[in-house]
Length: 177
Image (cartoon, rainbow, N blue to C red; front, side):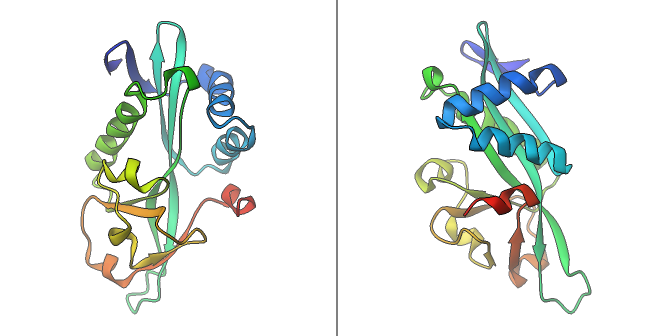
């Protein structure tokens, strides 16, 4: 387990599913996001999940999933796969302790190691901007959640990225407006 402070970051293990569901529900003060995490798992679109663990148990979770960019291109590649930061949660009593930042750094490092071209997020611009996500990087693209919270982080620039396109999230996100 690699970590900083009084917690470590590691890959999700099968026995973590129930504690993660409880943690996500507590972090968001509702069950919708916890149900979404489970639905994305069932969809088969999870790239990877990481957890932060303290001596008391799980304190944070992050999920990266696969999205598809629909393009209008002459190259014949109408859909391109991409990464999406699907959900990040930190236990309410552990928020503002660096756990979210550690999870995000570990996840982005893994995406960089995979030479991921671009990663998207819908989230708070001030927070995610600290990790290289910008609305400008997302400008050539659109999704059902347009606006300043729709951001991207360029990993390995590709020529096709200037074409833009529509970002499709995994099917479980369709129930959210």
